[in-house]
Image (cartoon, rainbow, N blue to C red):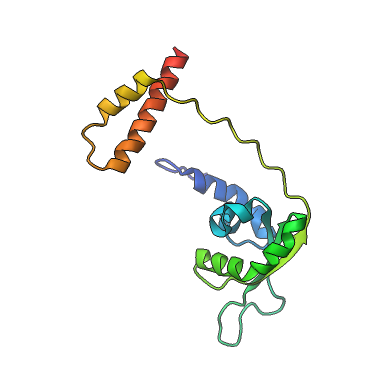
Length: 166
């Protein structure tokens, strides 16, 4: 067994675990499944999920030598199938743009319930005033306003969490 030096990213580990299963479903890359919400937007991602890529039989290349595109099978909750059918050209365009090549040329829909999604964690509690004041003081020297605001929020939440644990 070959040992790696240095840190391994979580995405590399997950890709190694997911890749064989996704490959069996026609997905050469896990990006369509893992990035579905980015590709189609949160509204459509809430009512649909990619199932598999169905590659054409026979040769996988056309007369010009380019790869022949696949059909993307998507599971969609009942009433939203008609809406997704109308938005299929947009979904195809977004998937292909995300992957960087003409991978998909049509969408096939399968109506049915989506897999259960894990319940969302409760939002973190609001930081207390003392933690917020300390975080503002610590980030005074940051010139970029957006970065300063993000660091202030982060610092205040960390300080609040530490106080709760103590």
